Length: 81
Image (cartoon, rainbow, N blue to C red; front, side, top):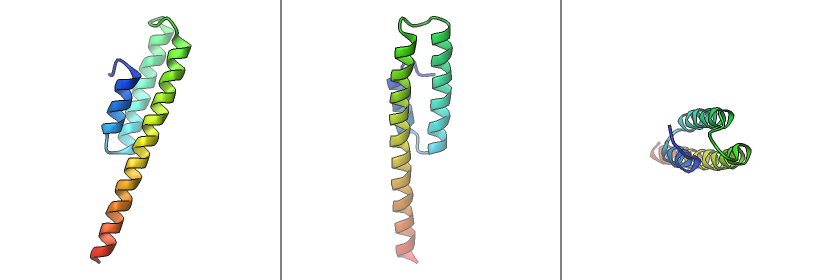
């Protein structure tokens, strides 16, 4: 599991599927919530909010990349027909 939300965002950005990206985010967010509840950070709420923002940005990026790749594949498939 990634130690920081930056690492989590990098993993999401590198994942080719939106479903895989979402799964990475859910596991990461759950781990950060558990860490905050256990008192594993000095500013749990601020850290969680910042992390959620980074995760949302990363998922938006993954969706955009997936959509662009699908559009490219569709365009290529149509031109060959």
